[in-house]
Length: 264
Image 1 (cartoon, rainbow, N blue to C red):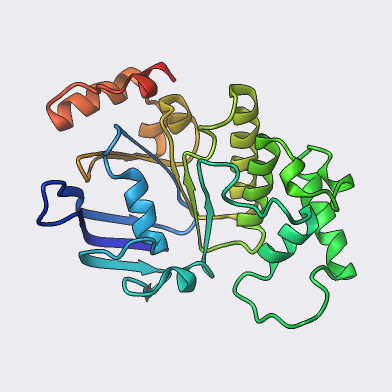
Image 2: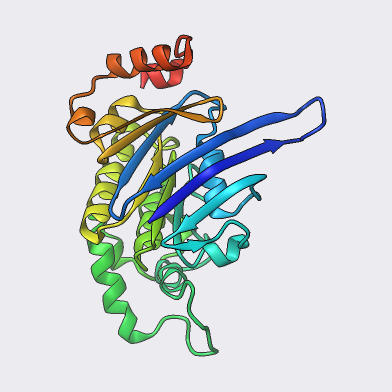
């Protein structure tokens, strides 16, 4: 479903602030892979997702999505095939619009749009059934402005919107980092359910090693713009946090100096 071939990206090239973000990334994802991505700050995790989404142009390499070379395609073109959920719960929804209007926008992603009413009566039942899966009572509040929801409710809604059209690839960039532990756990459970039910291919950046081990069928570790560890299947299922720390030290030649990840 996704192939990254020798992806390079350097920011502020030729200046004192030059920073190599990605240094020859090679990665292939099969249909249905759910990959968790860990690494220290500045390892290149979010940059890799942004390269796939087209936020920044790559310097070198190719990005193949479902057999199509999207390396030079603009961000709005790729948005038709990608679902994204960001760290900030406020980024994925329109706060001044109603819940059902936000869902209608997501439902029409990549489709031609006319001048008819934004939410058709035939769609409302679809949205109501989808909202019931969140188990947050939002199905009875479909005309509520999204700006009135809590951060956790907005993030759950954003996740639902990102998967409503069953994207070819779902990109999750630390999407629970801004939530309290209880709400984060609920959103992660919902994430796993939606991915499994819709047979989605997904990439999830996280700072939580336990979540990285528990979720998905594959785990990759990044450092200095490179993938230094790639594990899946039974080997991944047997991992402990101590194993990941040891792998990092072995692969990078240094200690994993990231208190946030260790403590989480």
